Image (cartoon, rainbow over all chains, first blue to last red; front, side, top):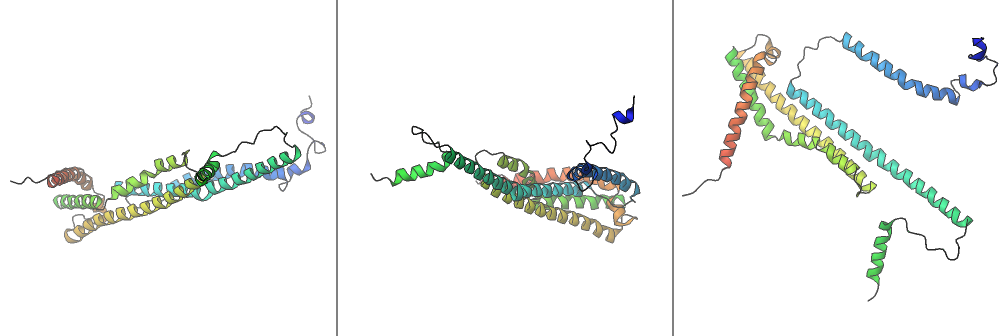
Length: 146
Length: 138
């Protein structure tokens, strides 16, 4: 059995895309993106024991009061950062993407309505948001002369 | 030497307890710790709109940061006061030959604080209860 011919493709094999070997190609950059976090994680994991072994005594003492204070402070700062991420990034992005998808949906509906005209006996289209219509209806009822 | 050290740590425990209670450090710590369930409720709420959630979360973020800074400063002040008491005693009586570090890390500190703090907390709570009781006239 010829292993070389069966499993290892030859360089002249037309099934191999030459761009896949290039780091600048999209396939190469995708592989780089996949591998880079693993390398960073491995480097970080190797640095931690090295720092622990090479550290010198600090001649310092952290009591329970200061220790709990530091833990509480770290918790508070972490909670503030997480909440700020939610408030500054998550909800604005969600709103922006939701608006974009709503615009896209409205555009699709408009295109569909122009392409396919409604039949004459078609019912009125349902309103998507009852919250949007409720104040209008109420204000209309209030404005109605008695 | 040990009697002076015990007295110093008893004084430190009383100072710590009084400042901790009077400056209401625990209230600020509770505020910080209660942010997580409150934020979770806001984020998972089905009645609030995204805009309301965004505003509430931003406000909570600033609030928790302010409370964290406040309780950290208060705690640092309390601990600095305790260290100041120990430094004063060390400067006046030199109870520890190893200096202030030796005084603060001695086993007498643990023993004195374990005994003094619960006793003082109990004494203080009784005194507060007694002062809170209504005074009967006639």
